[in-house]
Image 1: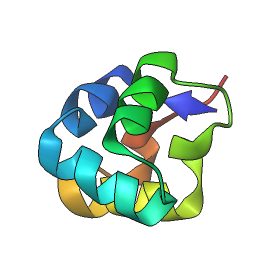
Image 2: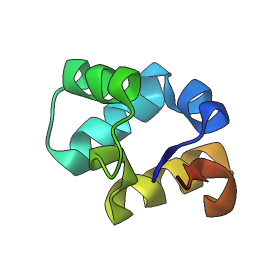
Image 3: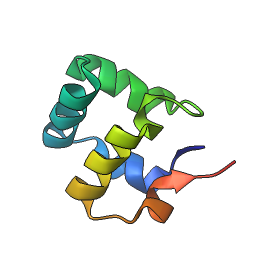
Image 4: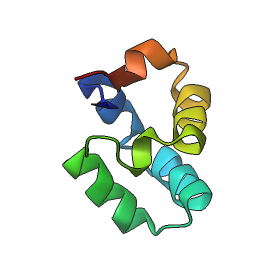
Length: 68
């Protein structure tokens, strides 16, 4: 599973990248690399990352995740 294109566009903001960096204990530059790579079952699809994305974008999980 990967993030949907809609979710990728919405999370690529300084505020959301900063929040994701905090919960994933990574730098914001690493989060930017994660967004560009959109890895299958990557760090952005972990539970803590999905909770941040849901809270900050107001998207339901079904619209955040793209199942392969």
